[in-house]
Image (cartoon, rainbow, N blue to C red):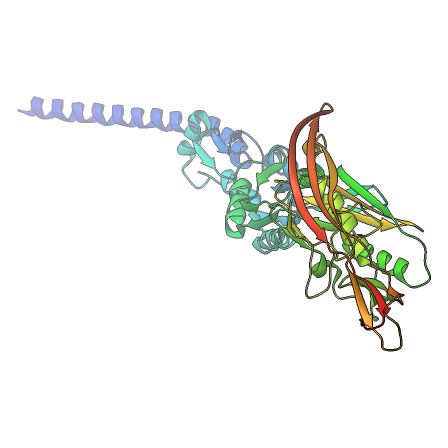
Length: 460
């Protein structure tokens, strides 16, 4: 029994000794590991653990300054001098990123990356050194929203909001120019702001190009359309004597009034509406006019030569008259049957532009002639219209007598010399390669004769 007890005590002592030896071994081993690991861990206290990324940039083993420098080079420096280009209709607008950049989270990221896992145990930190601490950060840039909104609003304000058709203007006799048309644009401001914000949220390595969301309204008559309608298609001129009675000035003023008239397809030209009433305030003067077959003085006398010259020019375009009347007496400045009289408020000369193209009228005078030229599309210039008249009947002057008791029946004293009258037709003939293609009757006019008047005695 005693032996057994002694043996048990011996075993316990042996086990205790072995435990103490093992403990001392592991303690020595732990201290050795600590001694070896501690400097390594301490060395990484100022370094970012492996497998830590900002965007796609690996910051493994970098110091705070190295990480900052690397991020500046790979991200922030790329942004410097970069520009946002916004293409809005015909214009391009720019905004520098330096203007709009307000801040970023770069410093916060690299500090967080550096202190990542640094509060953990020595052995855990050693594990991070060996195997890394996988972490990915997103670099956020903060932009000034007020600057972006102001930039977008400036674009919206500068865009054309009014549609303008192209216009034909004169730059000298026979020289036409086109004032360009202008489209209108409406900008969707909230959508453009959103597009800019989305572009700024991406990694920026190049200038940003954005097409603005705009609604475009094109003019009805574009620059190209109007420019194609500046070809001379017809002209006509008539002569007048330079007289001191004001007729020359009246012709000049009325020609000036119709000069530059632009008729779009479907427009109707009215001589009276274009020239207006011939008043002293406008500079019109008294001059001979034909009224009821006789020549009298009237304000604006002579303007019928302008309407008649225009009538002959328009006939040579192929257009037809809506309103046109001949004088009661033939005019010397155009062939019989090819005049067009006007009288403000009663008699007008009108025609309609039935072409698919604009019609531009140029009218001017020199010392003894009035010239009218009509311009339109080049496709209309190849038509050869020839205007002819046919005086097919002469109407003799009727003879009338005024009885005077102081005269004998055989006496005849001429009071008024009468004029013969005419019946005349006018025709428009179309030729191609000098060959007659078609003939169109334009008008059948009557110029009534004026009576020859004698004084004579009463018959017995």
